[in-house]
Length: 146
Image (cartoon, rainbow, N blue to C red; front, side, top):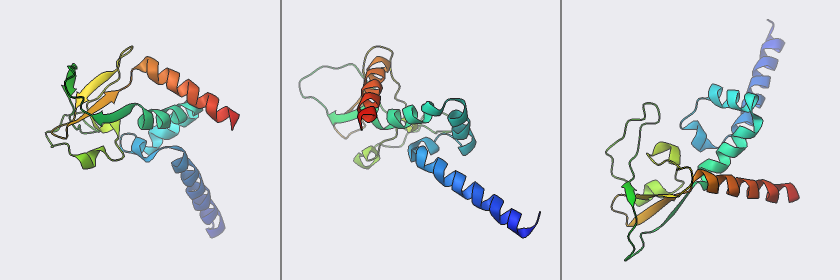
């Protein structure tokens, strides 16, 4: 391989990677490898769009409602590689640019799930699978009109 071919190959790779990285939210890169995300994109191109939407819209964080009884679970950080729950204290800083893939929160099929967030006096509301499907459809419809 001569120098021109090598440079061209590197350029194609860099441009391809740049285009790719703009499509996948950085939160996805916390839990998926570049090759996994590329596989998702090749097998089901719309999956990256949904995953980007999901990671940024599946939760809302609110003040814990006073005087209201809710069935909640404790929110824990988890190791993205092993899934092991960590004992690190969750702080308000962790809630900035929140990535649900780095915590033990999961969507239930047909009801929202609630998580107590350490001693922050905040509540994480994890939307149900049904609610996320509705929100994503609405998002798609709004983006078609633009």
